[in-house]
Image 1: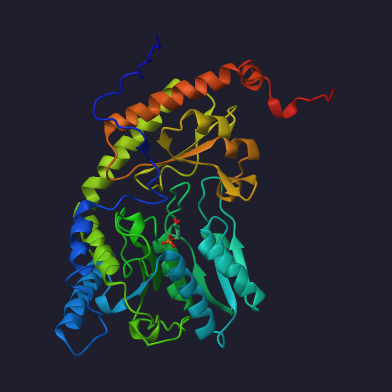
Image 2 (image 1 turned 180 degrees about the vertical axis):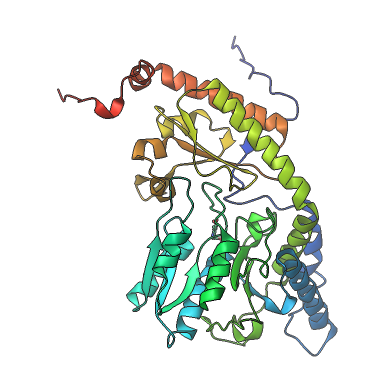
Length: 417
Ligand SMILES: Cc1ncc(COP(=O)(O)O)c(C=O)c1O
């Protein structure tokens, strides 16, 4: 006779696995899907077909989406260029501005905790004869305005600094940066993928000239994004990186992804209307998670300034715990770790290292990304589970025992046998 062991009962409202990795991607909001569906079937026209109603219908839908996106960031519809996502938007911004303003100068300023879509584009620009300054960040993950001021010279054509970081949720002083760039006559681009729809973004109040955003981070579809390109004061020019039919004011050729664009528009509209309430809910849940973890565990710390922080982000290090074991222990919860898998090796996150964290502390870090569909019951489950796993792992850890006894582990001389 076999005995069937039953799983411990889950709290009501909690279903496993729990998705708490909303900086990586977000689920599609059912309202967004509903708006998109007709554009896969009956309304299949090409928005560039000027001769018949199928084309006009598609164009009308694209125009509405342009309005919805523009409204969320304080822009005008004509300033929105559709792309395949933020990676393309970032590439188009940096390469397109670099090429267009080459006569004026060849210097670009960015910072070390940018997404790879920015960093790797800048590296390519360096190979092509541009000079790039990578500003450091302080222990809070913020750039220092004085460093930026010092980095600017008479050959600087572009400053590209992200709005909010995808790992640690830290929000850079965007309005201050924009003001400085405008005073100096330098273009300012921001990768605002993690900020748009989550916190207020206003391209005019913040003096932003070019801005990247993406559909799948705001409960819209994957494979669609946009680039905001300022048309007045100053009129920004971008050299196309893709040749073809001259769509999108000549800046980005290619037949428009109408269902995706409709979805991106709907996602922006929902975010604009619900952002305030959603941000309050998310930050309350995030604070609850943080408080539970901090009050039940020692040797934990939060990464990145909590004063300048996205509502749904919590990045925490669980010191004296091996990161991979921690992730294995909580494998019914989808979160990200402080390690980036590159081929066979586990590299510690370059963002956490830039804050001054050592490799082992970076490896023991977890990014919790709360989103629209998370509930308080899930937050409580996640907190209890993490506490339980961390405590169990530490019971097996001699390092934790030593640290608890007050031994400074950095001063221990280990002997090889
Ligand atoms: C800050 C940031 N920039 C750019 C990207 C790339 O966006 P996409 O997936 O739309 O290409 C991401 C997404 O991972 C991101 O978080």
